[in-house]
Picture 1 (cartoon, rainbow over the protein chains, first blue to last red):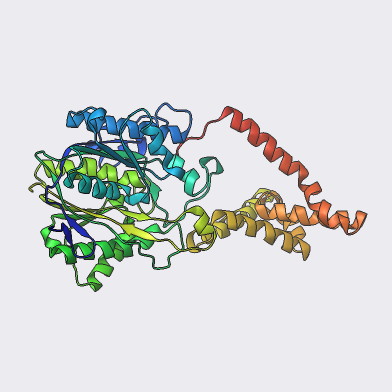
Picture 2: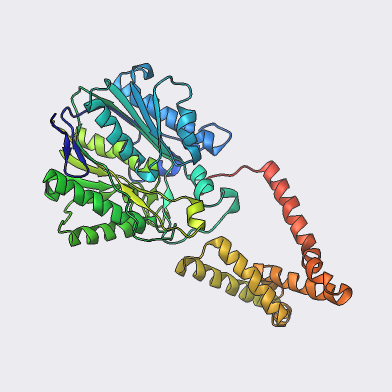
Length: 337
Length: 118
């Protein structure tokens, strides 16, 4: 049997799945940022009409999936599989959001890389012939993430200069076995990379080595060079992490001519006081499902390598003195098969 | 003049805290504990009382002032009750502050809702 695996980490999809629909829902601050035009719904109120931040996050995720399904012209019942994730303990943001839908459900945790993890799994599932449609939806909410990872908002803690800002956003994509594109042609699943960074306020530095590892593996496995892509876009390395990524890839012999970072795209770092940029699953997901995919449909880019990054630590592990394991998944998206 | 001294003294404590947040990996919670402990030690060796007299609220309101209060309470209780005072003095002296913090915290929680930072 012919294998679809290239090298050590990459799957070349024989029947590249198409993005049938994609949508995003964001909070107020994100809606005031430079990408405002690319969001489908900007909330006036980050509570989304709910009594707790966790419920707000689920409401936001539900809305993003509904919008993406509408754009794809499909009902939730037509989804064969749903891959969903968020940043909360036990992934409750996703499981409560999916509670009303009777779709086979996979809850994923990949920290801020979850959109990539979901797209990798969904596209391999469809390429394998297991169904016609798969949904991928992820979310993060500033207020629930602060409670989960740092301190509750009520505590009013000071932010450090290297801290990133968890984006309040949800992004959803509906993948179809057949369609007019854009297509996912290759996926490179990341390995855990941990260089011993312990500062949870400096996740860009913790994730950059993982991003460099996966991007280099993608080029190695596929035989492609960085200039094949019009844009190599990382998840949320922020300004510090991005500098580090460029340095690390140069050591591996790759120069990135067209690099962008979702964490830096989504906010105006000067005007919006977000220190090192945005983070959270919703960051990469909302930039992909708006700015990037819309741009591909408009003919701005033909080939994109989407590489969301995640810091896979927990507050407990950090308190026990553990370092931060990083991960990055690469998804090659093209307007042609 | 009194206000100026309080402003300078309190401001200096805040500047040190800001530098610790910006330049070290210390979390705000660790800095908080360090401030209280520093207050206890400075008070114990007799340095904080003169500072509190000079800086007024600028020295007693910041967290180091809370440490000073704990140490003063222990000193007083030990004089009155002996060794047992080392265990009871601190919390007795701080009881007013702690109870007020819990009570007013509760009141505020009843009427206010958290909002995202803008």
